[in-house]
Length: 457
Ligand SMILES: Cc1ncc(COP(=O)(O)O)c(C=O)c1O
Figure 1 (tube, protein in one colour):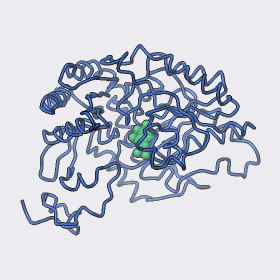
Figure 2 (cartoon, rainbow, N blue to C red):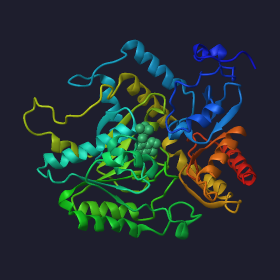
Figure 3 (cartoon, protein in one colour):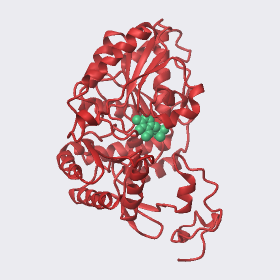
Figure 4 (cartoon, protein in one colour):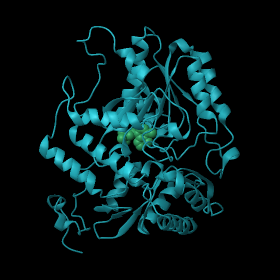
């Protein structure tokens, strides 16, 4: 090991081999969703990436079992994306999209509309999943108002839902740790459906569980309680990721759609993690054959290379705004970086890769192999459920008495030591590898998890 790495050297590629940090080097970065003190006492750094792998600063190879954070769907180090971004930055680094435009924004929206479920062919750009969610919620409420239904302002989310970290997303979300510090400042007029995770009925189901479609009927109860005339929209993730991979029971999403239609309520699918091929089609809406009215995306849109999000709106929603004097702004909402040129370039290059390599449907072909592999973990000590769909997997571990989350956290740490990056949430290990994964990678990921679960008390 070389001299200690100090703040001034952190950006220096020649210094990246150093793993010995001078005191204070890591202090300034307040890390998101991280146990900062634990991390900084034993940092886990990633310095380089290519294909299915990361490398640590010391040069240790780590296979990526989670596509970064569910975003690097086409695998790491895609030169086509880097080249497109570089070319765009040297041609025009920025252009506003408020009362102005640039060609790539229109081209990208058009390409996305072609990929989307029928009717969802109007696209509003954001910079993240959280912004996509807050944008969709605002569009839903404003849509009701432009139709003259200004009483329809309530939003219905779901327990254990994750919709990012904006006030809107946290309010409709249902992960208690994300909510409790902010409970007094949540959006008013929000209610939640029950979640659909039920180990008693569904543990170790392969693919979608058969039990639980009736839980969608809870929406009727909430409508009876609040009156449809007060409800703007229902938002759910077709598959919840952050709360530990929660799958929709067969028929559940169809039932939500029917109830929303019957009551003139918009249905929003948050496809931030399910979008762009994760379930075997471009969007989970297509895989599950349920078309929402609004669909939020981010992550895989640019393969994680440049921050960007997109909200897909049904044409009927968009068109409802296109009334009144033509010189007036129709929706008072947008971001300085909506459709940033570099992000558009990254997204277009990403869509080209997805098309050329058939990545948006690849998960469907490899899913049976993936399913068989992850289900070999059934029967290991402390494993209380294994769930899967498309290229998503989850292993739920029995919590240690009085210490929830620590068992899965230890599994996560040890997997990293043994060269596999997984994601831990509560006592669940979640898997969502890049869509370029090959059978040998699956074998490696599952073999290491198997070893580590057996070794973790
Ligand atoms: C379903 C869902 N919605 C929204 C978000 C928030 O996205 P971001 O972290 O880009 O704001 C996430 C992030 O994981 C997500 O999984």
